[in-house]
Image: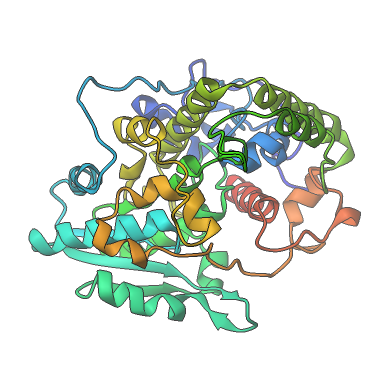
Length: 412
């Protein structure tokens, strides 16, 4: 049994640290865990990472650490006029690069990754910086297709001078890097630890990621134009469908935590059903702010040494406000449904290069989560093994594996 598995005692932390970069030193010392501060995590709080709001947004409902509250980030913007256009994205990426002569980018094939890679490669070329592009490998449909190889033509076109490194699946799963503040539960975060280790070994000063910007800026189903042309109108049938979704089951969540996870999901769905257009926009800005602060949290290797910092320039609050406040969340003219609902991110790409944005979501590795894979998650009771497997390529599968990796790091 994991040595910290059932300890639910109070932590020595008295102020929030999980999403507050100003208290990063306290996060750093959490590597020592209870031996240093008497701090411990809460299984009940970890279980909420399997609830609908956490899985949908990739953010946390509560900090996993006992006695620690999340300080929700501010969505206040500066008074500077920001337009949702490529130059604004490029300026924020240059700021994120700072004075580093060697930089790295995590590329997973999403529209925001393409935007990020284009502007980062351009900035590195103009400033004579060296660039490392890290591409997580996986096998997607059709059977045996290499995701990294499929990306090669686009990488060569957008970043011809970059050093391209493929993160093989065994490297991703064996990597011991971790983020104390919160398990990496979002699909795009699955390879983040391995990418940071590779960036450190290459002597990169920073790792740039899209940080979940695709999800933050995607047009939600209930803000899309209706067949009758009533754009951004919450219709009665949409409200009813959200309320019905409250009754969705809790998947493989273990019996001790099933009721709490279900209640958390139901409350979230009920809140969505009450939102109007203005409320939806505010909700999206809060999600973007959460993702931005999660992305800035420090990561450490297995020996407790801090890894290069992560930058998420596309989630800048002014840029987020401009994108989410524009009429560009949905584009009827786009050629595919995926491009129509990811139109906001497309505004950050030069018009002549927008045809390089993906027309469909990147394929997900199909490997399911099977009983016996999640040793600590199963032993803790967070998951009922009899309710596995969980299909691979789902948000739930990513979250389960992220929590398992985090628990292993805690026990080191």
